[in-house]
Amino acid sequence: MNLTESLLLALKANGAHQIFGIPGDFALPFFKIIEESQILPLYTLSHEPGVGFAADAAARMIGGLGVAAVTYGAGALNMVNPVAAAYAEKSPLVVLSGGPGKNESKAGLLLHHQAKTLDSQFQIFREITCDQVRLDDAGRAPSDIARVLANCRRYSRPVYIELPRDMVAEPCQPVPAMPAAVVDPDALAACVDEIRARLQRASRPALMVGVEVRRFGLEARVAELARRLDLPVVTSFMGRGLLADADVPLLGTYMGVAGLPEVTELVETSDGLFLLGVIVCDTNFGVSASKIDLRKTIQALDEQVTIGYHIYPQIPLTALVDCLLESVPGANSSRSAMSSRNFPRHMPADQASLTPTDIAAAVNDLMAVHGKLPIASGIGDCLFTAMDIEHTALVAPGYYATMGFGVPAGLGLQAATGQRPLILVGDGAFQMTGWELGNCQRYGWDPIVLLFNNASWEMLRTFQPESRFNDLGHWGFAEMAAGLGGDGKRVGSRGELKAALDKAVATRGRFQLIELTIPRGVLSATLERFVAGVKKLNAAR
Ligand SMILES: Cc1ncc(Cc2csc(CCOP(=O)(O)OP(=O)(O)O)c2C)c(N)n1
Ligand SMILES: [Mg+2]
Image (cartoon, rainbow, N blue to C red):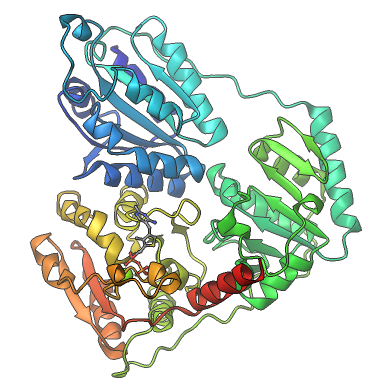
């Protein structure tokens, strides 16, 4: 076995299901082995940001490892933003980069793709990954790979593996399995006892679930825990889509002043708020109507549990959830299983112009007839609109908030799950990575793409309306679809939207792009509340 095959088998054993990538001369030998070994399927895309976003979304959807393979320099450094997004949002992404061979620098020439030094790339990725290795010693490679992949899964953060091109075919031993991290049973028991006591003392306990619940594959167990603890459940903004199909009293997504009043009231007045796998960041808590005293919460994140002023270290979320379940006998929840939330539905198919709320209603109507679709969303008002769509699986960069994620993430979702996704994307973001749709034909992907065309960087305009640079002009996105191998349709009324959605859902094998013409300044209800809330909070500071 050679080093690359050993690495690929280890990736597969650790939960990787495919590789997304773009080769280059520093990676050609490596890609050759990927393609010929057939250990993992390879999907090449058109631009490295798309490779990173697709691999990230694949990991988020299946709870395994996402793998992004690139060439040295121009390729890998083109992917810094998606890897940073994966780091910020705790996605287990493995970056595989080709690299110069050990004797290449001896010629005394600077190498093409070299930035500052030959080690610069390694140092850059050190800042946005939880572990890194350069595989320049075949004897050490198995243990190095084992360590790096174990850390990727343990911390649910990206890792960086550099493959010098003169090493990829070197004979190499198989990668050993790493022993699971040891958890102190007494510390775990004490932590669980204190959490239980806090929740039992609380008059208004509540459970907020966040991204780590998905990253560690705990949704079913957390749903069971919520039932046994008889707790109302909300998701964080980043956690939207969690427990979508679970039998729990899911009240909605917490968004402070921008969210549902009953959810905001429950969270902000709770005297026993249990944050399970929730990233404590501004998009999750920055728009709180009344400041949540996080010191009075129970926070379980990043392998530690914080209760009041003390911390239990080395408590992995999986161990905590399992021990909590053992401590609570069978389910006794008297709460209604699903939220009472009235999502917008029954969109009139008339000549009225489109609003984001109409779009959400049309999608809810579609799902009521044809079943739920998993959603990949970019940022912008399309993501705020998603808050009005029925609970369904959702991947979106809700915290790191980079544009460009939506379309490639939808492709990664379909590659990883085989499910047809609904992609929500703004016109500005589509200009960045929307062209990846041209790769659907090669792989048989057929997402339904809702392109919110307000001819604007509207999110920016809501905060700075006087700036003309937010005007993007009208691009003929619908007309471009055919050239990319799909079908495109521009719609400007609710009746046209209904007809276009019905046709899209009935057409398989080709992506369906529906360009939604949205009048300038027409925002989703959630974005309206968000902007008003942020302005009010800023005025009060
Ligand atoms: C990679 C990157 N570069 C710039 C920015 C900054 C930004 C945040 S929101 C936004 C406008 C988005 O326009 P779009 O048409 O997609 O959506 P909408 O607002 O609903 O009209 C920009 C430029 C971010 N977040 N990421
Ligand atoms: Mg726009």
